[in-house]
Amino acid sequence: MRRFPWDFVLALLFGLGLGLAYSWLISPLHVTDAGPAALRTDFKDQFRSAIAASYSATNNLLRAQARLALLGESDQAEALNSQAQRMIASGEFKQADQLAALAMALKEGGPLTTLPTSTKDGLLVVEPASSPIVPPTQDFSVEFTETPEFIDVPTADTQTVETQVVISNPTLRPTRTPIPTLGTPFALIAQDTVCDTNLPEGLLQVIIFNSNRRQIAGAKIIINWENGEDQFFTGLKPEIGNGYADFVMTPNITYTLRLAIGSDIAAGLITPTCQTPNGETFLGGIKLTFQQP
Image (cartoon, rainbow, N blue to C red; front, side, top):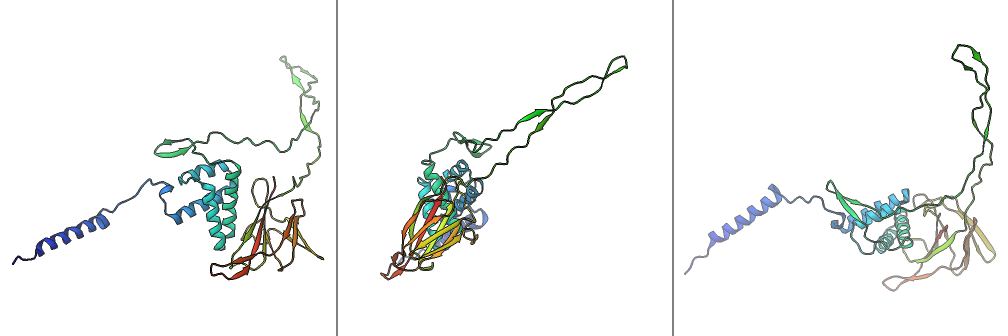
């Protein structure tokens, strides 16, 4: 009868334990110079949120495109919109608006293409092909007048000769102070049905952006219904967004909404009916997005 090779099994277990101890404790693997494309899914979401927040503050679309290209995703706008929907569901409205604004800018600016890159001192350098040229919004003209000034010029023989020398001394002429205008009317660029059990039933959300895709606070919103009218303003909930405002609609009543500063009219607004995965019905809401062309 052959004896079981316990010595071989013990040697194998000892070698396995020694290898694990060496790889985990003595000389573990250190990942260095890894790109954002190697990040975990939740870390990629944080990376996109940081890019969207930076774009909201600087409005630099080229820089945002260069940073998003580091993730190596084929459709960045779709990834931003998907993350925005997840954040809306979790109640993070401010970050969701920033992500949606960046996704909208990417779609309007054209498809995201691979930007030319180079390496310098071991770092990845993204070089945009061209820079956007922003036309001036308004021209200001300044007129100058010449005021004569008399000075004394001494001669070489120490005799003072009074000479009239006319020196051009520009003096600003009073001009009219330009009055800021409200710009072109705001367009209704999105009208979405929101089915979220965490939000109040019949919640009408309004978000207003200017032409630079920044939210506008203090904008007056007028809403009408049969034999009734009300007004509310953006900026009263800065924790959600400076250009955010909301209104609770009554079921079975049709509303019409417009901006006091001029905009498209959102008509036929009525509380929608939503359905849960279990088949139960509940009243949802509507989200309107206005932007200045």
